[in-house]
Image (cartoon, one colour):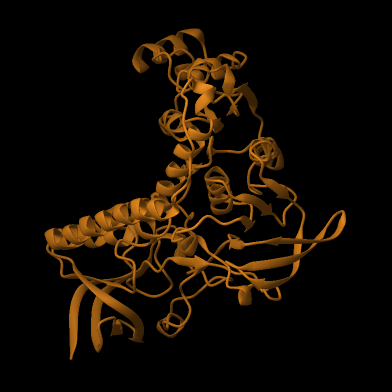
Length: 477
């Protein structure tokens, strides 16, 4: 016999869980069906666990350089079992917090694997045995993604690590080979270098962080190489032999010719695949884009009536904060609003050391589209805060509209870049001219204070009068 709910949410990731809690607290019978990760991948396997271990690696790096800060230390060793224990304790605390929120909201959580048996009917194979039939008036697909493994001969057979398995290691790899020069690959490559592993990054594209401007890619590569990481770009893996965790060998084709590289462990970080196969979406009228992503409009409505999609599976940017905003769009539209995904400012932050933060228009994209800009760029080392913490690598740059002085884009490589970016984001969202940040009184010595120097490097912008800038300064401060 089927159990009927007003709202059925498949997947308990960021957007889905917040929608469930909101709808249930509003008095609507709501159920969430989750295969494995309570709260989704962010608190269990992705964002928070990786940043937890990255911070342990930061501590290790500081200890290794303690003499430079006037601190004498004895012999230092890395206990990866303790690193993992710290991460696991954090994850368990987050799971407990999520369970409390489900209980408080009244949303029901069902652990099992769902498959559509009809337009609004789901058969759920329960994790603890048995099945349930669930029907709903409104369906929300919060399916998430999983790590892609390229079809390279021998790669899958070598049992490579993904971001999930690498965060469960209780040992330090002797030679850590990272396939992929994007966010996941760079964060974990540097973390394991800080722990003490020999690290090699293999990147198919001509530069790391292929979607960033060339100067960003060049600077982060310079930083990683200076730490002893080998970076091989424009390379194709021809074949793989051996087993990750024991001994593995990769045959490469590089611009310089053929090359073999051997290591102890391989991490594959080459992209994501949506969890949309095998659950009957096509049969209920939910169309998919190439690659398996769910086709949605800018209100996150699918091609089936009363069915929405949230987060990565809908092609939203692969960030937890994007999924959270997807929730807000659906929540407000269900209440009669008219919010969309169009033109939303989407920040990103790479948690290497130093961080790489970006929001808005990139310099390369501005040139491609023929958008007129003024460019301001200063070294992060010009911010006096960096001298106090001995972290001077990187730069800050901003793209300014010559017409009205609005900030079109911002990128920073440096300590606490993500926090500094948030200040610029607020100015961009409110339409303030760059002069508002140039003339604001910012606390000294902080990283955000560097915005004074960055925007002072901009020549006066036509269309922003001195009196207008003065008024903005008064209101901002």
